[in-house]
Image 1 (cartoon, helix red, strand yellow):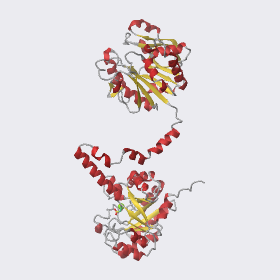
Image 2 (cartoon, protein in one colour):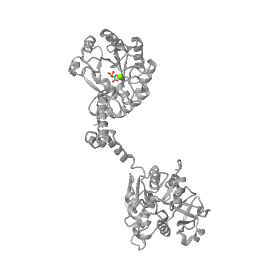
Image 3 (cartoon, rainbow, N blue to C red):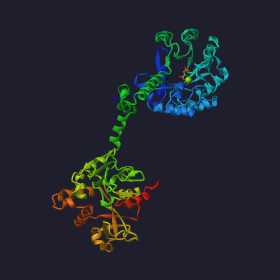
Image 4 (cartoon, rainbow, N blue to C red):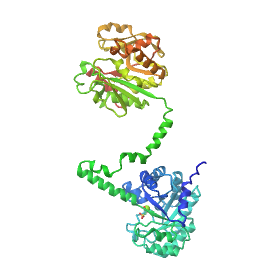
Length: 548
Ligand code: SPV
Ligand code: MG
C-alpha cells in the first residue's frame, strides 16, 4: 500500500489549533535546534524572536532585519518536516510590510506567523513591559486582514498576540483586542502575561469562553500544570526560550572548564560526540545519495611517484623531507599537485613514497610505501600502485609543478594514452646537461603522437637533443583502456631482470614498441620539474596568486 501522503506543514499547524487537545510547541532558533526539537517529538516549533536574535548576538528589539530572521527560519524549515510558527514580532512594519512577510514565509516553508500588537521596533515583553506602547487596534486589525488576504495557502496560520496584559491595560482591554483580532481574521489568539501566577491568563480564558483558539506562552507562570490549561481548552502551550537557555548554560560551563583546565579532555565526556553532530546534520542521507548519484560519475584516479630524495643538488633541502614536500609559495609540491587534481574531480590519489615516507601525510590520499626506493626506479614504484590503474588515471611525478590547465587538457582528451610535452627544449638558457625525457613526434600539432623513439637524455648524450622535438613533462593520462594496458604491461614484465631500474619513459618506449599510440599534448611552459634550488626559485613564479 502506498504510504499516506504527509499532511502539509500548514495543515499540521492548523491541526494544533484544535482546542480539543493541548499540544506543545518548543522554541528553536536555528536549523540544529529545530531538528533537535522535532526529534524530541514536538509536533511544532516556535521560532522565537528572542532566541533567534540572541543566537545572532543581538537584542530582541528588531536589531536583526526581517530578512535575516527569514534566513534563519528557512534553515529551520530545511532541517525539519513539521510546522514552524514564526514569531513575527510586530510584522516588521505596517500592513504592507507584513503581507510581503507572509508571502515570503510561505515560499520558505514556514507554516504560520504570530504578530503582536506593539510598535516597531518592539521590545521583549519581559523588559519594561508596562512602558511598552501598544498599536492602535484598527491599525493592527488592518495588518491581520492584509496578511490573511496575502496568503496563498488557505491553511497558512496567522496568530494575533495581544500585549494588553503586559502593558498593564487590563483584562477588558485584552479581551476587547482579542475579539477585534478574531473578527479581523486571525486564526488564533495569544494573550501574553509576565506574571508568575496564571491568574490574569485564567481570567482571560474564562471571559473568552472558547470563542476562538488560544495559545499561551507560560514562561513566567511555568509552575502551573499543563492540565489547568487543557481543562480550559487551550490549544497549545509555547515553551518559548528553553533550548536557547539550555545552550547558554552548556556553552558557558564548557568554555569555563576548558579555559581553566587548559585542555578539552575534561569536557569530552559531557559534550556531544562528533558522530552525533554528523548524525544531526544528516550525513547518512548524503552518504546514501553519494552512492546513488556519484557512482555514475567516471572514476578518476592518480598515481604520484614521489619515492626519491632528489638530486644531490637538492640534498641540503631534502634532509628531513622527500623532494615532493619541498615548498613553493608556502605549499608543498605534493599539496599543489593534489589540490589541482582534486579540483579536477580526481578523487582517488595514491602517492608512492619512499625516502622519508612518514613525512608524506595528507588527508584523502593513499600512501603506498616503496621500501626499496633507493634501489628501484619509477616503474617499480608505479607497479606497487598497479591497483590504482583503474578508470581514468593520471600518472605524475611528485616533483612536478604545473598549472592546472595542463592537467585539465590531458583529462579532457579522450585518447587512451596522452602525455604532455614541451617543445621548448632548444630554447636559449636550457641546460643541456640536466636529465630530460626527450621525445620525437610523428606529426605536427595539434594531433601529434609519440614517435617510437623516446629517450632519457642526460649529460652523457646531450648531443642527442638536436634529434628530438620535445620534452615529456612527467604527466601521463590513461583512459580506462589505457590504464588497463599499462597494468597489463606491468604484470607481464614484472619479472624482467631490469624491471627495478626502469623509468616511466622506458615504459612509454616499450608501449610504443608494442604498437601503442600515445598522443602528445604540446605545451609551452607553465610547468617545471624541480631538480635544483634554482628550479625552486623559478617555481615560485608559477605558483604566484592566480596562477593555476
Ligand atoms: C519570543 O520568544 O520571542 C516571544 C515570547 O516573543 S516572549 O519572549 O515571552 O516575549
Ligand atoms: Mg518575541
